[in-house]
Length: 107
Image 1: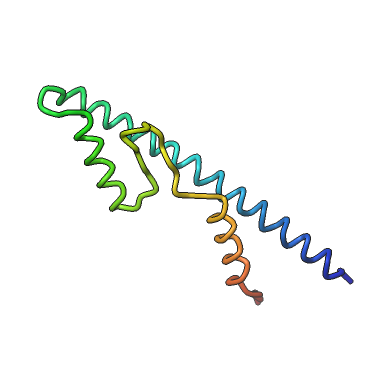
Image 2: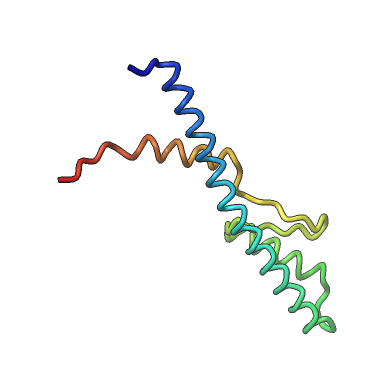
């Protein structure tokens, strides 16, 4: 029989590894989207540099991305990308996955 302490430790290890996996999977995709969006912005600025100021475009992009909740965030002041997917969200997702998936019997 498994002791309660072993079960709790195993459960916590499962949660931590699950959160780490989901965090890593989403981080890779977010980085790809950041690179794509930044390349599109640079191309757009290069094509329209006579009638468009870079700061104005970044202000518009900041507003649009904030409102669309895509997980992308481009700060025109710091030029840093900030992710909306965190390890804590991964932990929450794995915990909700465990608590909502019940025992299934296949006949």
